[in-house]
Image (cartoon, rainbow, N blue to C red; front, side, top):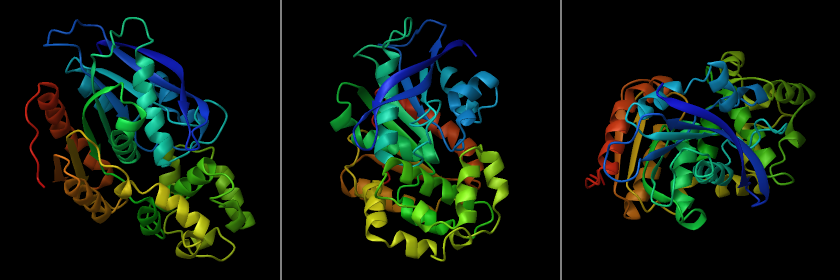
Length: 339
């Protein structure tokens, strides 16, 4: 890897707009930029890591266990700089606010701002940026592109690439109920939203004693352990009797879901490549298509493409087209659209 990696802590804002400390990693290429203009940088939003503090991407990059090293290396190979936020709650002794869209957008965008403070990056107001992510990261990058005009107008955002997007979190959570590998991810989402919206998303009030014990265990796990640990389980295996649909229908809970529905948020003002695995068994493709349609209706120049494979394979099969898209946008070529 022809880059230096720097772990940083920086300021951001949570879903309540309060100041928080967030950690992340800045990958600065060591070779000079020979392209036209300023070196492009990619703000890479990572997919599901797990809720344990040890699962933070910055810690896993150091340990050599980070699952998202493949896209980092592909981006660095193009001579672009890369930043990766840990999101809210990692490495600060808290609980990650998993899939909380506003928090994710803030932490991703402020990660780009933080890079300008690291000596040797060369990041400036003229630096062209792209947001990019897959799975949870696809949601986070999409949210960042959506909120960039209002939250980070100082960043020169050129484009966004979002794959496997959980745009409608309620739809995704309900679809995971009873699935082969998804119940742990469903509980991750509920735990994350409770952390992001205390006093409103009251998960603990609906959990049984066994459910609270499971919640405590999940907060110590990384995603590989979680995916294997809850086959064909349902929310009512951990609740005091409510199904996931009954829990989600509570007015305060439904309100949080509505606030975290990317489909209803402002559309990005930059071109977007959105892709999804043809056989995705974790994030329903229907709600991803609904996001694309909403953005098309809003006038976004966006391409929606279906790539081979299930959810996990989709990131790898979609990566070459993602890099090609970024290459064209950084070069100033007109963006195509499938709208």
